[in-house]
Structure formats: C-alpha cells, structure tokens
Image (cartoon, rainbow, N blue to C red; front, side, top):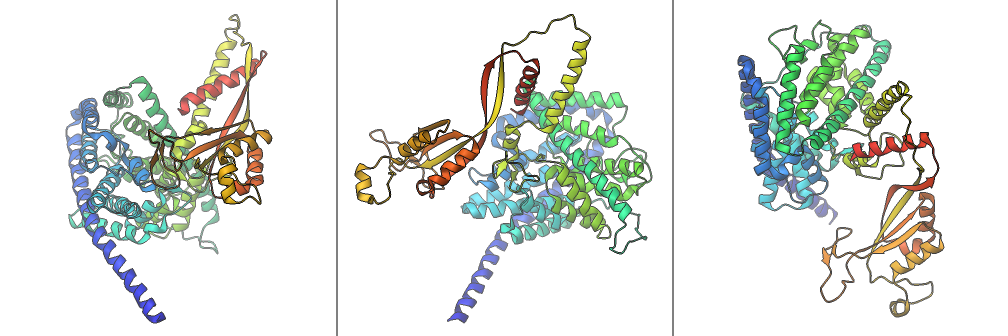
Amino acid sequence: MLTRAFIGERVSHVGAALKWAALIVPMAAIVGTLCAAFLWALDRATDARIEHPYLLFGLPFGGVAIGLIYHWIGRSAEGGNNLIVEQIHEPGGGVPLRMAPLILFATVVTHLFGGSVGREGTAVQLGGSIASGIARALDLQPRQVRVLLMAGIAAGFGAVFGTPVAGAVFALEVLSIGRVEYEALVPAMLAAIVGDWACHAWGIHHVAYHIAFADTARAALGIKVSLLVKVGIAGVGFGLAGLLFSEASHSVGGLLKKLCPIGYLRPAIGGLAVIGLVYALGTREYLGLGVSSANPADASIVSFFGPHHFVWAWAWKIVFTVVSLASGFKGGEVTPLFFIGAGLGNAIGGFLDAPLDLFAALGFVAIFAGASNTPLACTIMGIELFGATHAVYIAVACFVSYLCSGHSGIYLSQRIAVPKTANGLLPPEISLRHAREIGPSSFDQAFVRFRNRRSTASHADQESIPAMPHTHHVTQAEIGMVRIYLKPKERYRKDGVGRLKAAFSGRALYQELVLQAKRAGLVNAVAHHTHYGFSNHGQVQQHETESINAELTMCVELVAPRVQLEKFCREHGAMLKDKIIVYKHLEHWKVGVGEDSLLTEQVDDEAELSGIAE
C-alpha cells in the first residue's frame, strides 16, 4: 500500500512537471525570439543615430509620439514593470498583451533619437505580457498565473543579458525585499534557459567583458584583505549611488507631473533638456545604452574596463538617464545603471589605487543590486559575466551595496518582507511606494535641509525684514490605529453563556468592542458598516436594498498608542482570536497657543516633506 502511494506521488510530480514544461517552453521560446528581434532592432537604431547625428533633434517629437500612443491605447500598460510585480503579488486584471508591442516600439524609438534608457524594462515587459496572455487564454488559477508571470520575467531577463541563472533568481528575488519566492524556482530556471537559448539561436550575441587583473597574492582564506577592505568601501559608494539614482528618478518624475499635468507632453520637456545637456557638455557619449563607443577615449562601459580613469562620467549618466526616464521615455534602468556602476567603480578604483577593471566589474553589478534590492541575482550575474575568480569580491560589493541603499529602489511595487534595518514604523509586507508615503525619503529630507540652510543664510543678509510669527504651534506624538474586521451578525458571549442565549440577548460583538475600548481609555473607537467588498479571500458581498447583509464585513477602528492597543488585544483575546487585525502607524497632532520660531520652522519642513512624499 505504501509502495503504491509512493509511486502514485512520483507519477503525480512527473505529470505536474510535464504540464509546466508544456506551458513554459513555448512561452519562453516566444519571449526569447521577441528579445532577439528587440536587440537586433536596438542595434540598428543605435547605428542609425550614430551615423545621422541630426536625429537627436527629433527626440522631443519622438517622445510626444510615444506619449500619445500610450495615452490613446496604452492605458494600464503604462504601469510597466511595476504592473507585472503587482499582478504577481495579487493576480487580478492581468498584464495587457498590448504591452509587448508598445514597449518594443517605444524603446526602439527612444534609442533611435538618443534617449538615455536601458533595455531590461522592455525584456521584462515582453515576458510578463506574453505570460499573462497565455494565462488568460488557458484560464489558469491565480497561483498558476503567479508562477507563469515569474517565469516570463526570468525568460526576458535571461535572454536580454545572456545570464539565465541570474535571470531566474532575479524573477524570484525582485518581488519582495529580503525574500526569495521558491514557489517558481524550477519554472523560472527552465524559462530563463529556454529564453536565452532562443535568443542565441537567432544569432544574437552579447558583449563580453574581461577582467585582466589576477589576484596572485592571496591570503590564507583565498582573498587579499587589503583589497577586500577597498571593495567594502566601494560597496558603500555603489549603494549610495543606487539610492541617489532611485530617489532622483522618483522625485524628478513627481516634479515633472506637477509642472506638466499633460502626460504626453512631458517627454518633449525631457527631450529638450537632453539636447541642452548634449550641447552644454559638448559630447554625445551619455546618449543611448553607452555600452561601447568608436572612440576609446569616450566614456562607455567597455572603456571603464580599460586603463583610462574617468572621474565624473557616472554622475553625468545619472543626469541624462533620470531626465529621460522621469519625463516618460521608455526602456529600462538597468543598462544605464551598469554604465553608472562601472564608471563609479573606475573612479573609485583610481582614488583607492585599486585595479580599475575589477572595480568597474564590481560597480557594474553592485549598483544594480542596491537599486533593485536583488543582491543574490546580481552576485550570480557577476559570476556569469566575469567568471568565478573574483566571486568573493563580487558578493561583498553586492551585499554591502544592498544594505546601504536603504528601503528605496527603482521598482516601487516591491514589498518589504524583511526590513534591512529594524524599523517599527514599517508595517509588514508594505510596498516601497507606500513606504515612501509613510515618511519622506532621505533624499527629500536632505534637499529640504539644504534649502533651509541656504534660506537661513539669505535671511541673515536681510535682518531688516521682520519675520512673521505664528500664534499657534503644532506638536506631534506617535500613535497607532488598529482595524478589526468582523461580521455584523457576530454576537458577544460572556463566559458561561450558551450560544443560543447569546444570540438573542447578547450585544453585537462590534458594539462590545467599542464599549470595552471606551472603558480602556482608548483615544478613539468607531465601527464602520460597509456596503460592498470581501475579507480574508471570502466571497464578494453587498448590501441588499431591503435589508442589511449580515455576512458583509464591517470594521471596528481603534486609535491609541501602540502599547495600549497591544494590551487591549491581549486582554480581549477571546473576542479577537479569529479576526483579521491590521495595524497602522499614525501621528497625533495637537495645536497649542504660543510662539516658537524653531517649532514653526520644524513644522514647515515637515509640511513640505509631506508634499514631496505625496
């Protein structure tokens, strides 16, 4: 009997594997083929831009054309990589199939006219849209859709960079900070390998990078300690540069949305800015991907592995890329990040008297590890691209960069599963987008502080102008809110009282919770009736016109300091043990009478930071 059960389970596993292979192999082959066509078109567009420099002046017009196309037919496809990540977390409307042709066309047009964007976004969106289309056609279950979408990401990423193992791990790691989704481990690996094979089958080849440095003076542990210390220092720089890039992209994008509410006109502003930067600097080396250049003296990824020392090329590439992406041009962030990281590694290597080619390779992958919060995938990518000889240095650079980039990143739909540092203000499984809403980023805070220092200096020169004091001030205190979800039909039952008696004589449970909260001295306690919705993955319910639906979820909301809320939940655990309870951090503001210029300035700062965060 046991033997039959064992054999039956193995047969079931084989059947499931064959079913997934039948889904993933053709999907990944299609994605790999599309990536090959995309890379071929990208090379042709880049060659045309270099051969015809005047195409740069078409960048604003090309940007408006892209904006109009997305405005007319793009709709949800505008969400890009973040839409795919959101659909993996919570499968719902799916990823539109039109995303594939739209992103392919928009990226090629952007590169044709000189926009500083990458190609990873296109590959990921190609994979996600094809996978979602197959899932809809086969009417797959939500869990199966999640797995297929992750496999689509792996196929696109592995094919476009020629790194199948890194592509598989990236698809599993990019969804949540601090957690790898092993649910799709084998499907993602299979998809990445097939996608890479399909891309190569069409004759597409990737640039090969070579590190000439060989660490012959190895210590007992197989590493050179002095060089490892320099790698750690560089890792901090890579993480901070990744943080700068991410926050600058989000902040400049938000600023442009406020300055120009019409979405399809924003690329025109970005295009004009790029043209202005080109003529202000007198060079075109920061346009496009920047992988290589006909002139060895120009800044490019290949040049950073050579003997020349480039000090500020990485910073200018940040400016060009942030302007291009924030204004609405399509492509991706990864290849520009490779340029920025390799350039910064070259610069840091020169200052630390370290091997330029090794530090260019470290920056190549480490800055992406910090900006995308995927240190494992980037470590594997470094080994796939540069070999395993320097695996320890690659891993240290990627892990340090990941730690130093903070809770920021280029993909705002990422969720924080395991915070990088202990921070009680972050609710579990919060997305980076919502984490930014809780409090302004360190980049925004630094901007406001810098502005205030300049403002203070300016006021010192204008002492004759009297300040206008405020007659009231605001003080803040930390406070929390708990939301308890339950059904209106649930009754409160005292110890020793039977269910039947409680059903007729007992008070409604939500009423009892509010009364108990009042007795406990909580700041606020209210109950909200809902009209339509569901809770805990149950069926969707709604109010009928004649009567209240006793199955429809309602909410009891309690406001008090966190310690007091925790104590309340422990004391009334018998009523709450089976309920869905959500905690959220808030601030309690009190307005008082009195003049306090320092306090007023602090409040003004926080108000401005709140505006930036929104």
